[in-house]
Image (cartoon, rainbow, N blue to C red; front, top):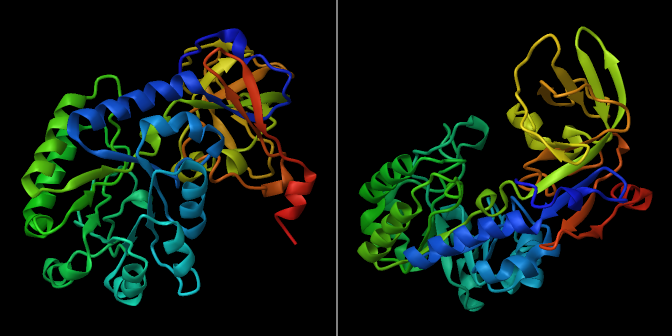
Length: 388
């Protein structure tokens, strides 16, 4: 994310806090909107990635609705975003399906069993029904996030069995990309999907191709992607849906922290008042490094070389591996310095937790004029209420 106004990030709001930058968010959303205009596809925000509804009014004009992974998410999408609301879950329980259907505009079942169990309720509610398909191929660099991993439970793959239930469904969802920034890889994968399920697509009215397509990259051939999607739509006579999560919010937020302590144990060490375990959990899950986007409110381009003088920035939890990353800094960090970590929107606020009782970051919105607004803060009472 580029600082459109360095002074905008100076604040009297106590750290830690997540800061959403509406200027950067708008840049992503305009790219999503352009892709939809060129291709005829519809874009649904994936709430599993980003569900900070305080900016939904800002996002709504650029998107067609939301897609969910649970009863809570589909309800949140209906109540706070509106427009189209797609409901999906790996497995619905019998005691929640009625509530799900009350909020959904479409419902997508993960398996033949789920379809058989709940399709009649969906018909009675006049809700279009879909089924998740698994092409058994994917574009994912991480096994943990690979929908086509061995023995995957995510969707059905038997074409003959899918054809047998075509009378029960009007569409399908296929999600087999994860941070895929290659148009060629996406197009080749779609070729494989068409070869396997093409006859199925001809008998449907809509197809969701899921998310995980990193088409907001500066050098991504957006027009080629749009042409490929339109070609797919025209070939089968279907409405194409996309489910962007990261593509909507990439680079549009940061986690702002303060250095609480500095140490030296073979290398310079610094401890900030946040935690990857509690506040940027995907760094721990995927063993990634958080980008530092500013120090003391000044933008910086940092090398991530690991040298004898490079600084390891730790979180404040008791987890030994609570590490934001190792950085070659322009100057040693001092107690009281402000350090802001980038890419703090996707899979961060939706996964934040109260591990160690570490203070929960507030949520702050920086508007297009560079003014900050405190959207939500958290207290001891919130911590206490999360337990029993």
